[in-house]
Image (cartoon, rainbow, N blue to C red):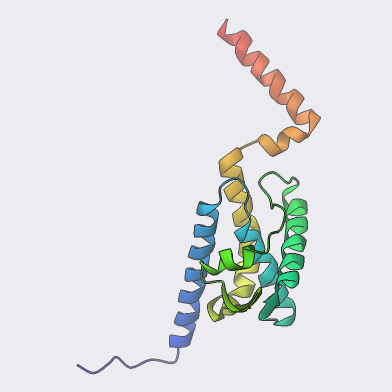
Length: 166
C-alpha cells in the first residue's frame, strides 16, 4: 500500500503536534515538581531568551540569568513567591534535558531542541498562567494570607462559622 500523500498543511499539523508535545512535557515538569516549581520556570526563562534573540545554545551562566529573570517576573505576575524557584544549581540544565528541552553539547553547555524552538512563543504566553494554576491548586489561599486584610477577613469568617455551630 503506498504511503499517504502529504498535503500542504502537513507542516502546520506537525508544528501543532510539537506544540502539544511541549505542553505535555511542561505538564510533566509540573507533575514531577516536589515543593518548588523549578523546571517550568527554567523553561520559561530560556524560551523568553530564545524568543527575544533566537539564541539556541546556552552556557550555564546564561541559563542561570534566564532562570533568575523568570523567577523575578513570575513573582511579580503571581504577587507572591510561594513554591517559586530555588537557588540555582548547575545541574538544572541536565535535569531539564530529560524532558527533551535541551541537548547537551559540551560541559555545562546546552542546545534548545527544535520542538521547543518551534513552540517558543506559544509556550511563553501559556506557561506563566499554567504555573499560577498549578500553584493555586496545590496551596489554595496561602499566598493571599500575606495580606493582613485577607487574614482578618478569613479570621472573622471562621469565627462566624464557629459561633453558628454552637
